[in-house]
Image (cartoon, rainbow, N blue to C red):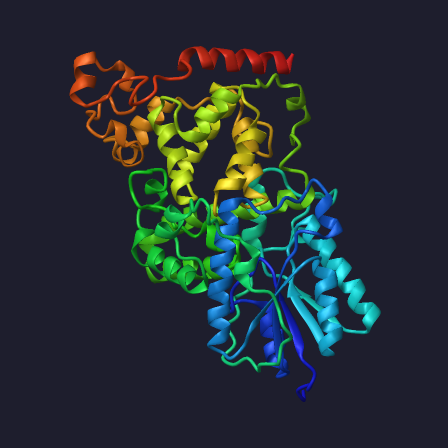
Length: 485
């Protein structure tokens, strides 16, 4: 096919990568000049629905760094990433008209607001007589492919995952070797978007723990599969070890695709059959992300509505003081406080600890899961519109395939089981660094002499528990019983 002299536009969204980018691959094969554009859209009509929220602070920081990384990788190929701000359908259709674009291509994002914006862009381009091409790109399987007999999405993970496994996701596409550049009009400066904090600059811990971008994503995956995945099935529950993949924020911003992770993990297992069990467990975690995103496809207001309506009657408390203590990691329960401080400093939290701190909020404190979900949305670098609310509803008992409400994590036992020598707590709660392991998860049980020798003064250097576990458990079960009645 002869190359068109008119430029083609590739619209980057939550797919900030060059490899396994179907829209970019399609345009690159046409041989036409390419204009790559990213639009910071906080204004589209579709974004006024409750299904959409602006990015939280930690995610905005990641986006800025990821866009810089993408700019760098495109620049190596002689291509400029054009930045625009405003309603995406208007911005891109106007750009297409101004440069006389031959085609506009982008990858689908299977979420209600994103699809509405996509539909608006298709309509605007149709009006201009400019073709549009849309490709699957953010999931292993499109939600439309996993339906029950009534045409609805599946609400139980195991049968859902079996259906996905049976589809055998397509192999990922390579990054284009060359990208024919096109002249681009003026765009915005990334710094002018003010995505990163300045006064105060609270992102030092994020910078010290993360390197956003596709190159880092690929290196992180390779490092994990080359060694750290061994023992993953057990180590993933241990916050005191480096046993997780650290891929979640890279997946969130599409710096690596689920298909790339899937096939790389399968290849690792084929090369080393001893890893088969760990790879299967790892892939099931990727499957849970997929499950949450499919759930969001069917329930766009997942972050605000109980999936199980019975929980609409739950007697949540209003307690700003307790909520603030939880947010700041000052509850008096070391494993909870360690997790919340890790979150604030690094923009992430170990998955096991996420469940513990979430259970503590909704069951020990009887505070609405939406309070916790909103805090995570603002502070997580991997805050995903599907996984974040779905996981909170799972812990609260109000979601799909949820843990029963009466499963109440004991934060003391959770700490003793998964952080047995207290190294995780000591890292994030330095006030307790000198406590012996037998007291590290329950410092209030140490004698005054033992506390003094460790330099701990309860309610001075470290808080006493803000709620008694036994009493909180009884209160939570009573509240649940009233809801069921």
